[in-house]
Length: 166
Image (cartoon, rainbow, N blue to C red; front, side, top):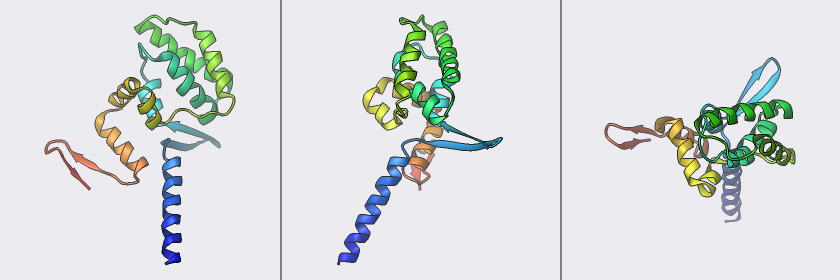
């Protein structure tokens, strides 16, 4: 009896650890002895496309911690990446804040070691931005990402029939 309870506890603890680590889909590659980490939903859903809204939030909660603490870019390079992204956003809709100050505030906060918000937490905190990001990634790619990294299984969706195949 004690063995099965311990085993059950061990499985639950292991599953909790896996779920905690799976909050970020991190792609790591070796590039000339430098490790580069990427979080796919940030790269594809945000950095590749300018946005007319949610820009202060993105700088504060996503880009600053992502570039400094996940990709391990120096402060100056992180600043220029964010500034370039904000410049592209400004072409869509004029910024209503001072970009230099907002970027410096975001980077200062990120130097404390914070990591970017997880996609699950983004859904809770900022549903509108979550919807934008997931739409930009594409439905099939998003389903694959979610299942592979959050549940460790691959679900293929047959869009023509609308049924799930396990």
